Image 1: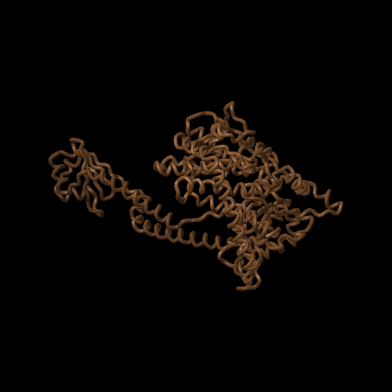
Image 2: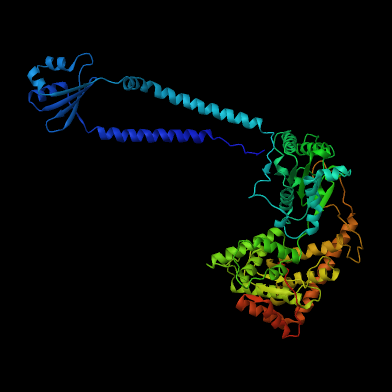
Length: 627
């Protein structure tokens, strides 16, 4: 069953078109009539004089119209009485039979069609225009009525298993081999349901895909349908909810009805948290459209039978806000988590997105994968596209490694703002600010090594310091967080020491450092004073009807202790940064001076600068951190 979108009919647009057509017709008619107006019209008396003078060659009679051709081949027109014949009219004016015999007469009677058309067209044409106008209006009203009847129909787009252009399989999804193995059971059930039913197994009715934005949830859902070779019904959770109560529930019923008629099939609801949030506690009544839609989804999923072979896939990056009724066994039985790809998976993803792109011989996707920790699949796809754009902009036919390296910074920080010119004083402040970040990062043992330092504006940043972890991390230590806070405070501290004042350029650094310090205290239990306790565990949004009268999970006295501990950690980070900046002041000055002169310091040059002063360079590849 092919789902076709409802075409909207614009009545005003068609009326304007009709008026334009009539204006063009009138203009053409005026032009034509202007051309024929060159023929001279003479009265009968003048025609009689010309006949008597022997100047008339022929006369063509068409009803009451006379087309007169003179001896000089000029043409004139005249008219006679409708009731009288031409010979009688001319005889009454004194034209003799001899004069009339010298003239060639051609008498043609008017055709029936031409006569009736000429007689009725002035009356019929306005009537036809009026009828056409009302027909158009009726069609518009009919279209509106049909649209109102289809308002409760599902808006899902269906991808047919025979659609080769839209079909996606597991080969098109790189990495996440454990997730594909988990979902392969769904594929086998849709292909061979009898194998499961005969042994008494019940396949999950719903599968919830959880992961950060861009991790490939939608692509993976399409791949499941492509592997199973079944219709794929795709829509967003927000498409259920309209301003009219009951429309969402009606669309849910129609969606499951259409899917069952095309079974085996897969229904995919993207961003299900738009309708699947916790239901209210009764405050404000139970007529909320979103809540009614969720209730209908729960009822439809409960109504599944094993032989119906319709499976619901849903995706969200906020599983903590979903209603518990959605997550209970019998509905979304299985929850699959998609993490950000590791270095090997990133290389596989880059390889998939490199298809169809001409690369130079120096391109090494492994190096790009190592320099993009924290990138999602969508980020990597954007990276490859930006690399191709940079190569095309420079007029080259192949993408080089340098294009991909530049695109990493463009994806993370934004394009270079070449028009954003700093004054001499601002450039000096920015250089020392970034030098402070880079110096503290290179000295502290648990901070990530520096990859690049620049005072070229990108995005909203006047300058930036890019860092790389030595290896792929999944667990982070307290020492690492404390050193990262000190690195974040490095720019702020450098400004204060060098210039005796601070600027607004450190605002993002302070925000980042404060967030890390708060997470240390309230989430990770890494504060010696507060202890191993997680405070503020609720991260779900509070809205009317849920947690309306809820309280904090810690007292005011604990809140004061948390604030004091965060302030203490920030102060210690600043002190650590200050000690190292004062100790290695010469290194700071040299890094800043090179930045002022060259604007950018790459990894090798930076290592050479700090090595001269006895600081051992760290070896690692890149994680980008904007400070």
